[in-house]
Image (cartoon, rainbow, N blue to C red; front, side):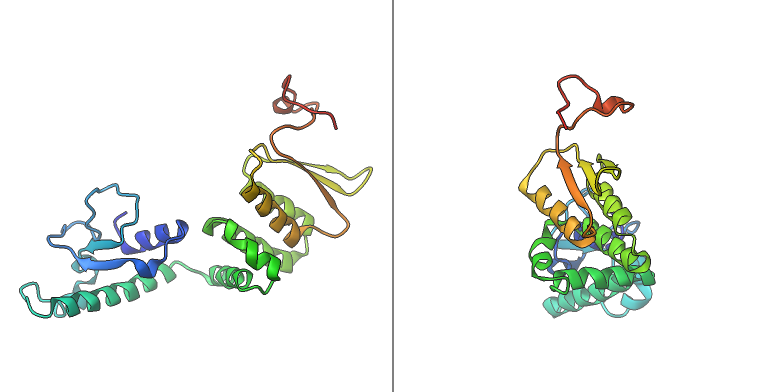
Length: 229
């Protein structure tokens, strides 16, 4: 990470509150990097981050924070932190298009209970990246009405090793083979996806670590790894 916007996006993805990060003037700081981390390849998000405020914002800070000024250091540090937070927000939002704004509004509606109490209570089992997948596909659902396709797409994006089958001849049934360990958290994720996207006429059969054999799919025809259907 070299820029404050990289740090901010990394914090969002890890579920860390951005406002809790305090930006200070590095003493000393590198003239070749914006973030002054102890480790150049740092991946963790510290509570206090030293930066070079002149790296990209020299015109803003050249007269605000005189390096030789030793008085009112606490006030200077607080003003610096507030200014950097504001610049960071502009930095992050510059990469957003109209669709990204809609996605953020949709996530906010999910978290605030506009899709019902059940969704409000369960939505935080999803990571920030998974919430974006949900929100984007909900927008697509309003645009296209393709509930079954978006159900399958959402499951495949969140449970990335999934096999999906349809049993349309006998009944409207979708079969998910998730190929992952069954846990309470994963069960909750799947239930939320079904709640949001599953059409009333369809039913879902779920298999976690084992499934029946499927002729023509070598990965599902392994001895001692299949079950009866």
